[in-house]
Structures are given as C-alpha cells and as structure tokens.
Image (cartoon, rainbow, N blue to C red; front, side, top):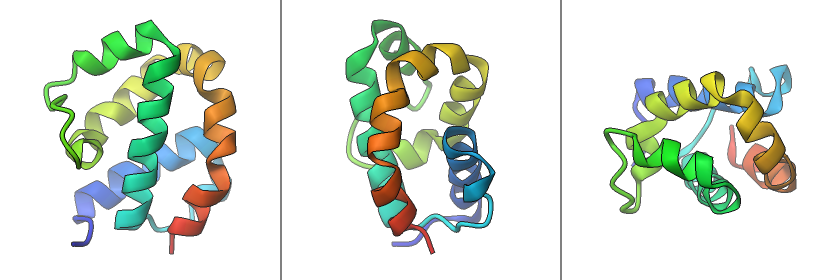
Amino acid sequence: MSLSSEETRNISEILVELYGDDFRSRVPTEQTAERLEFLFEEIKKCNKKIETLFRSLPCGVYARGWFKRCSNSIGKIVRENRKEFQLCSQIRTWQLRTIIAESCR
C-alpha cells in the first residue's frame, strides 16, 4: 500500500520539522511511515507530557498504522510543543535519522 498525497505531504512536513531542510527533497514511503511510527512510540516512552499530548489525538487509537492516520495532528503537536520534544526526543530522533532517511525515495 502506498501513501496518499495528504499522508505524503504531512509526513514530509514532519520530516522537515524533525531533521531540517535536508529532508525537504526526500519523498516519504510506506516504510518511512512505519519507521516514524516506531520513532514516535519511542518518544512517547521518554516523556509523560508527550504521552498526554498523544492521548489527546482524535485518531489516537494505537493500532498498527496509527501514525499515518494521525500525521496531520502529529505535525501540529510537534510544531506547537517543539521544546518538549527537543529535550526528550533529540537522542532517539538522531539515532533513527539514518534508517528514516534511507526509507525515503
């Protein structure tokens, strides 16, 4: 299954928020969504406030594929709560950068 154009756009914006302009030209794939889902699951573990933010998502049913369904809301949370994400997620985000980059086209 491939990403819809909306999912592609949302995930692209998330990649740029997390990793900067180097990711602007990358095109996310289904594998990118899966790897970002794993990343955000790891991020949730490291900070209760972030976990609370995720629980507030209207699409927050955590069945496989939740990341794609929530990509628009997650992008907004990341932008609005950047400082909370920075402290907690910086290490995991950079640890997974290479495998996420390799999953893009």
